[in-house]
Length: 473
Image: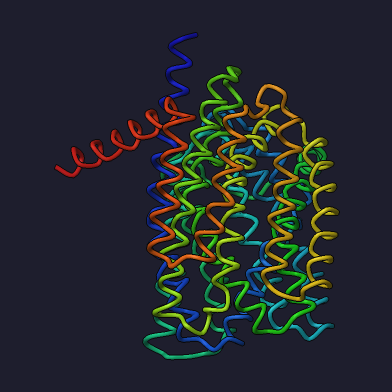
């Protein structure tokens, strides 16, 4: 048993490292894209690109939970346990099912004469096939392959964007959106090739209505939960897009793009913890990881300070979004714990119904908060503040739902002190001074209240760095 637990820990650490490295590459590329595109594209074209990405975030709903059912089915298993025939059935079901959905979506886009919606419809099949492969690789602990999918997508998107911007010099948003869709087809082809060469699976075409229905039934509630999670994290953008100007939407979307860079560090935890929690029942160990996640997130959000500095000296046309930057970044501290720990616990326990019901409540709360924020102030800052309040409510609900992980007074004290300090330093102080004061406060809190977790985190980072240096030599 101890040996098996050790293997699980080793797989978790290796998985975090692999996904972290992939996301580090994604960070570099996203930084370039995130700051160069808004610098040289018109505000209107940038708003179109962000509109496509907003639409694309909901494409996963079209599978009605089929890929989520596979995620639950294969959680904790090995990829080799699936078999060629079973994988062929999954792929065939998905392509046919999504082909029908694509035809319907194209028809709707044609009726509405919406070009961005039309391109979104065309991307449904490749996006959902690639997403399903990612789900399967994630659930089975194949983090090396999972990380390569991220690498392919990031590198290809970067190359295409730079060619369109710097070589062709176009401001046509449809070309940038079209390239993103083409990348999903290319990644799909590369994944098929990878599965054939690495695992020896030659996938054909074999349908199974029973397989389709069973996995939809199994994953439908989880899909609703994931959809609700996406909706919950995008309610603010829908309010800004529907009720405010194109400029407001572009400014707000720019902050969301920068905020998403934090997800590059959060994703390794979210991705690997599900497989770990499926086979580990020791909640003391999970609590320790939860506290490490909290501390890591508090340090990570300090990246908003250099982002603000870049706004002030390089992207001055988006300077109006600097206050929103810190309000939205503060939500990522809570998201790290919610998505990395609590949501994975719900999935591992097969508590999809509880997860979904919680999100329904939070969505209603989010809509109310955003509506009040808009009608009282009509500013991006008010919408961002409403989002922060919604996430705090979600964190409180999760905390009391998983009794084994109810926050201690130390966890709560760190949050109560660190988050207000972060927003005050970001909004009212110069970038450099604000960053120094905030990090000093977080370091003092970490060593005073969570010394064991802080020492563990420092040791883990030191080990990662030493490992990379040795491999480099």
